[in-house]
Image (cartoon, rainbow, N blue to C red; front, side, top):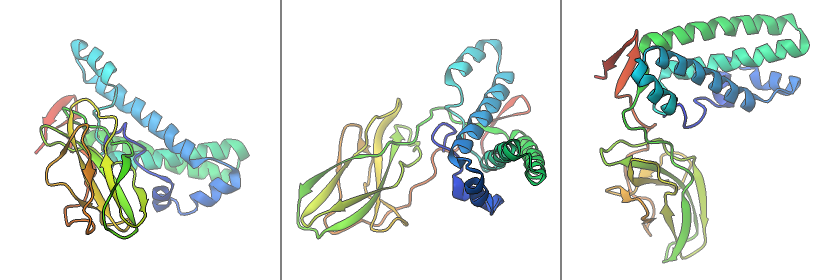
Length: 253
């Protein structure tokens, strides 16, 4: 996924690092979603500063225009965002209550965030040459057929002519009545997208690719009357083409 697609972590992901975080958030009336977004903004600013420091004068203007829209969320960056969110969260909790327990937690996550940032920069900031953003929720219409009523779980992804595939849209559920066949259309195509893929399942897990070739931009895809077809699972978006680390661009692979 790209750094601009969505938050690299959600509230449930934070519980991996801090099991009591939801309880503390409720007790102290702190909105964790707001803190996730604030931490993302701060990480993004730091990443942009780092990229600008590695840019030549002629490339700096282009970098300022791009921002971090071509930055890939690596596992190191995902951890950085998570622990930095907890740093921001406990900083707020301490400032609200001046509770030494929260101060200790803030100090702990401040150090973990510092180390996670260093690990991210040492591993390298991954960039893609042609970013394909996360797809929006698809438009859904219906055509007539013979399938029974069902609930379909659907995601779509944008695909570039080079074969690069962006992050899947947020999972959406489609309820049909008897005789209805869902027709899926990806909307708001980004620059560089030439088509889209459709992933479907009858459960929220195990979504499978339904189209054999990408559906052209502006086209639509009718689901199979007999149910979802077997296919590969959706990925997590683009992999980096290059990494920026130590002031140089390192080729992937």
